Amino acid sequence: MTSSLPTDYWGRVLYLASHYAGSFLNGAWKTIAIAVVGTAAGCLIGFLVGIIQTIPVSPKDPWYKKAVLKIVRLILNVYVEVFRGTPMMVQAMFIYFGALQYTSLKLSMWSAAFLIVSINTGAYMAETVRGGILSIDIGQTEGAKAIGMSHFQTMLYVIFPQALRNIIPQIGNNLIINLKDSSVLSVIGTIELFYVAKQNAGTYYWYFEAMTIAMILYLIMTLTASRLLRWWEKKLDGPANYDLATTDTLAFTSGLVDYPADADDHFAERNKEGGEER
Image 1 (cartoon, rainbow, N blue to C red):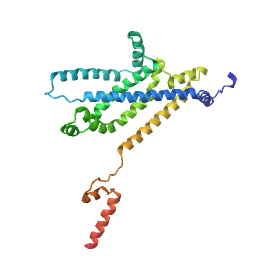
Image 2: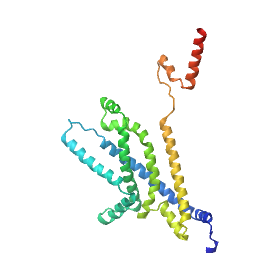
Image 3: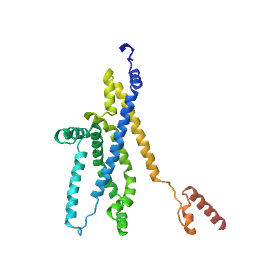
Image 4: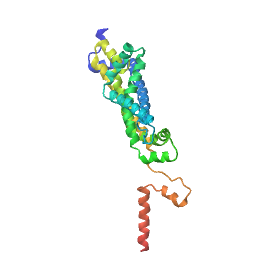
């Protein structure tokens, strides 16, 4: 049995890939699930924290509103600083083993994995969302408030649709980071791609070969995610030229000129006619 095993590097890679393909693909699928769910939940956390951090406070507001907002914002700031300032591996061990030892909370391996990635991503997204909201011109908020919108309605219908376009690159970055950083969850026994690669490598002690397969799979996942996010960005950009939706025949033609191609021909023809008249 042992004598039939390949001895060269690529032969071992192909051997592991062919004999353990199902195991590697299962690990990759679980890595994708952790990254996608964690990033989506983290974005929701970031959006909620962003809304709270941008709630306006005026001198006319009652004292209890100011006090509650100050306390809540302090707690959120501590959350953001702690989870941005510590490694995810430490967070995983602290939450998973700490919850089992010092609290009555019973977390399964997968519950802990989703929770850790979500709250870690939420801490980063909170600052991203806050920056995206503040990047929108203040006149947008003032206009929404002028027609009677609440802060929540202003955020939901006016600010967020515009801020979302600005923060999509960071959402994509977090997804790609989570695809890679989910490997640290192996310290709590989460069976994802890196964990599976270590298991398969230990069968024959072919660690270099097994990690080559894992690296290729990680690269495929990150490149695919990157291309899909760029496609989403282009979809949100919309067309480069627009036609005016109006019944005014005098203004209607202004939406049909596609500069510079059509406009250059139009101006050249007018200049030629003007020269002939002179």
